[in-house]
Length: 117
Length: 107
Image (cartoon, rainbow over all chains, first blue to last red; front, side):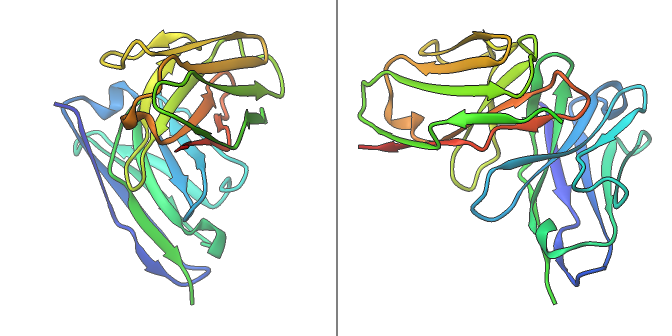
């Protein structure tokens, strides 16, 4: 059974850093595209980043240069390193498996990041 | 970046109604479009991909169509469990984008 479990969210001050983790089971992270999607309170979905199976990475303009997506193949885990956090980064962050030419077929339960002083 | 514009942003409908949601891309996306359903407090669920292909396990009352820049999601006969927010998403470019969502509410 495919499962994704995000951890690492919490309250962080503006300008701070946080690393989110997404532990996967039932499939191999390194063999798939993996993505982060966020949702601000009461708002819609916003795509954040993707890492391809080959290792290429892409970011939304809103986070480029501040966020870094990566994976640890030995732990079958996806990460999102978030630096220089802003109030507008406050959101529930979901990790999801992406299938080429299909979309995001499995999602985690999400982890809440709150950026506030 | 490719912008995705959904309409309407919300609608009210009754059980049994036919519902259509539209998604327009700012440029052609060659059917590289997925639709998701999200219920409050839950993660989104993939409904359709490649504009018209039904994800496994999704009821056949959901269907998708379109080409180029214009796409639609249709629910042929709305059921109580279908009241939710629906999002389109393009994966044509390397920078993916979602529509702003359409909330389907009970009339």
